Image 1 (cartoon, rainbow, N blue to C red):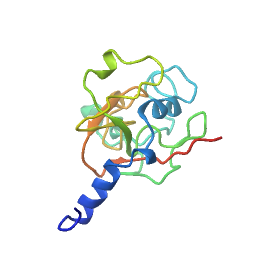
Image 2: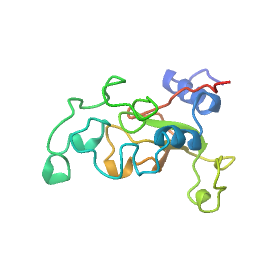
Image 3: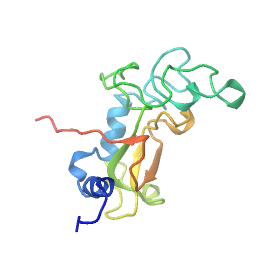
Image 4: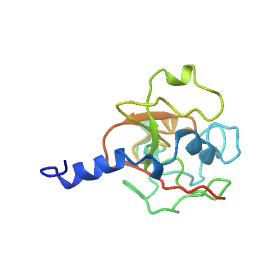
Length: 164
């Protein structure tokens, strides 16, 4: 029943029930890695002076673990403001965390299939990948995952279509 619910509650309900419009977790990681085997698509550690992701350490002063400078964006940045990965995909890490179609299971991946794990069949929260403008680089690797059941300013989703 939609009557009596706010616009945001109706939108959240719609998005929570439509997994076909969001990438599955394994597809997100595959696209983020872009054929690399490293922790991040650009390598193993901090990118140095390369502009590869809109992450929190750009905004933190050096004494708090940040780079001590800003990337010019206090929150989200326009798509394409940073380098694309090797497959030409922008913002796979940073800017807005990706809300995937998978349900979150705290211990699921300890015993999951090695190839294309689908995640638990049910759950309370969806898996979040890629980190956002609020995420420190250590929590934004290609393999990092979190969870959320709510729409937030730093979470979005990426529509995808199979190429045939």
